Length: 205
Ligand SMILES: [Zn+2]
Image 1 (cartoon, rainbow, N blue to C red):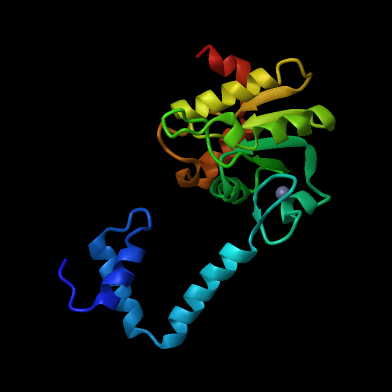
Image 2 (image 1 turned 90 degrees about the horizontal axis):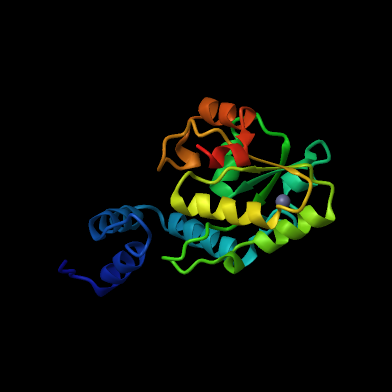
């Protein structure tokens, strides 16, 4: 791309670093912003800066939160004997939108992936195991996407919990392989949580 302006080129380069945004899309977005009143870009950059500087991770479930203990963990009406294990906040949002789950979450922050160099130590697995060992948890539900990485992660956690007397289940695999939780429709996802199956049984399939 030949830019007549270095300032424009810099802005396009920065925006095109975002996932899924090519140079052409970046140029369209930047030109759009350029046409907007100045406050728009101020709000945008301020929102991003505030997010980056002030956002926290809930000390209990590791979900993104503005406070030390997120709204879900702080809610006394939720069942803290039931923990749904998810990859990130998008899964929490997807499951919350089904209104079918009243337990708590544990956000791993990713999945075990040797190819990407992500091992158990890079995720919040230790904290999950410690929580299960020290607490009143009766059931763990795996809700990771049904990919090889998801399966590996489930199995790793399952092995760590083997000697503890709790139920381990996985959401029903009505969701097609490769589909991420956030794309599953609410009814399908809600049903797959209600119809969850024992994890051990899912291994034999
Ligand atoms: Zn929390």
